[in-house]
Image 1: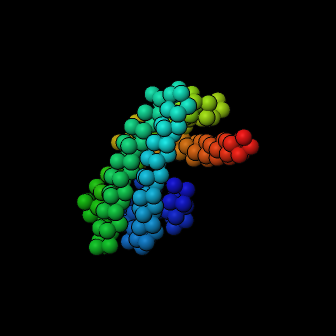
Image 2: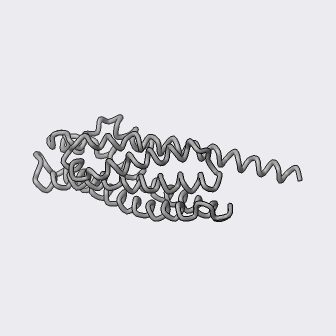
Image 3: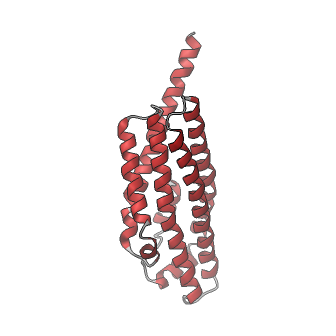
Length: 210
């Protein structure tokens, strides 16, 4: 996700509220960058689903505390994957149609707005995934309390931003309400990843000494 965002930011991707002429010009000139970003999306989806499925299994092996929350995370991640797929498909439509246009058409503008709407719908799905995963990990003693709080606050911001999906599709800056939640998700993923690696290394050392 970080690499994907870095690619589009580096080439100066337009915001959803930018003039449609700028959107057309960008996609006509940066087809390769968009193709890379969409291609990276195909990596995000299996990684996300693999992570929440693995977390669900780990919660079960640790006694089942947090099982309901982990099931929420799995269901929300499946919904998130579908929303991301729609977001990516519409982005492909935008970049392909831009190659044949000299000025924005109503169909091009509609596709761009639907692309923005699909992104807005990913926010509450990611928020629910974040909350479910954070609660499940905390209930299973996989993470400290501050990570549970991070999940609740970050996930709540994402869900709140997603409630403004229509406004975001129309270019509203309300989108940025969810950006701290996205940042919190990445911080949480890194923190739990480090903790799980350390725990696994410790278990290996303990097993080797016995």
